Length: 156
Image (cartoon, rainbow, N blue to C red; front, side, top):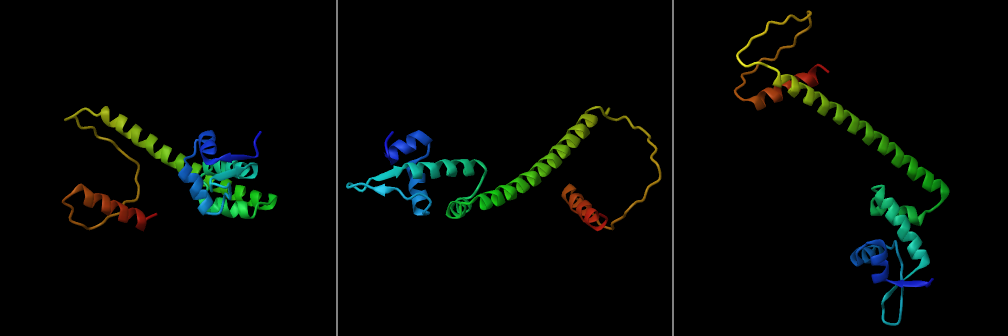
């Protein structure tokens, strides 16, 4: 195994463009050595850091977060970052589940709408319930959407 690798070798091995590797160098995350021709030579330590960068990018870490992590790499700092990311993921999962529920409800509503027979009226009875009212002159559907939003905010 060699001690140093050129940018083209690292680029092919990791599927990362040379421009990205140069960008990591400009940020101070990677610090390749230069040979007599000024070619970048990446050490095994740089490759270790590149593995970390790839792993953290898969977790949607920003480059600033990655630099901060690499500058202060301790077990305590790593656990802190991972706990924060875990909390964010939990929040995102909750949001996605809520969106999935909304989509399911809309699909169900549309399926029920497909069963409606045109020009056929059905009389339905509902239990007594409270009613809210808003005084407005409405000429377009968009105005109704706006009015409903106002009512929802007022009566949460």
